[in-house]
Image (cartoon, rainbow over all chains, first blue to last red):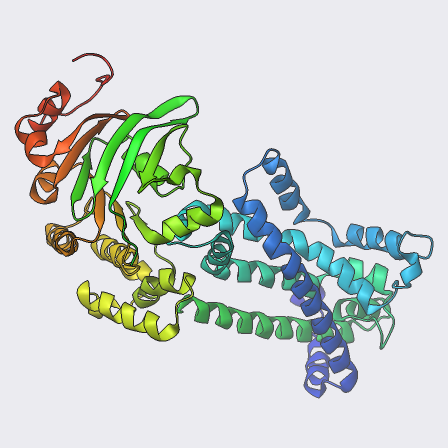
Length: 235
Length: 255
């Protein structure tokens, strides 16, 4: 009966395709990982300091800003794709940059999706102990800068988790990449947009094997990052 | 090492949320002496110490070190002040590092050469008997060990003024004895002002030179230990040293 629920007949083909893992597949995977890693890195460079700042500073309206950040953590990628599209299209305010349907456009959209995730997780990590860390740092003769440094290093494990979640969001996201990247073969096609294409082309076997490769690759990348995190814990 | 001969706290007031936490607190702590501030929880001891460490800004008063009012310090001078003294919080926050690295933190924040840091860390580990736990991560320490590490980390900078908030609260008698001995050794060196809070009257009797009773933000009595314990002038102090628990008493009303 399971035969009707799942196309097991596709599996042997899938696996042989995965084993062959041709250069086209490799270049799509490499592109996806590269774009998502750059997007996560850019988002971390903005989201981590922003999260530390928001987590530590007390000001009027902080709750509103933190709530907005948290609700943006679940921002639909497709909607982000449309917004970035409108900005980058030739009629849009940034149309003169001619970035639509380029890898840069995908990086921009993915970074924007990642920033609230990374800063949101950083805020919740930092809020925990920041007062004690700040007080202790000052009492030990530290400067304001030392406070930020210590809050960062004391919460590094959670901050790294945030970056991992951001990377996971980027590499699995399809809507925004499709809209602003245009799914151009050998140029802006990512693993996820390729999966969509192959499914629509009536090649679910190919789509499934790409999916399995994507899952395997993300698994190993996250595993590596987790090892880095664990090493940090033992510091 | 920074030397401070005496620290004069003059009529310091602090209020928070329209509530007066410290009311006209005046006292002098001197080099080579242990000054103990007694009082129940919520009396304002921690607040007073945070004001001294310039972590809180008082609403009124002066704190004089030599002829300088530390409350008028710029932020750069405030950092310099904090670097010349040491303040150990009741539950010292230890960084997620080994004991050894924690102890080195104040020195590396002062950008001292690594060779000097290593040497002083080693000395401190020996003095405080922390050799066995030097490589341990701090989350694996007992509360007594945490207190000792907190104290070691503060004393490594050789401060002119050492402020200790309940240094022996909730720890075993053995560690308590060890900490008291360390403080007495520090006192006998004669270079440091030691200001501590405690709600253990017997501890104050054992190690302090001067004692004061802070109750509901008011320093009801302050003076040499012998006078404080043997012939207190204030009725509240008398009751306190006789072992009475002070609750719901307004110290500003005549007693």
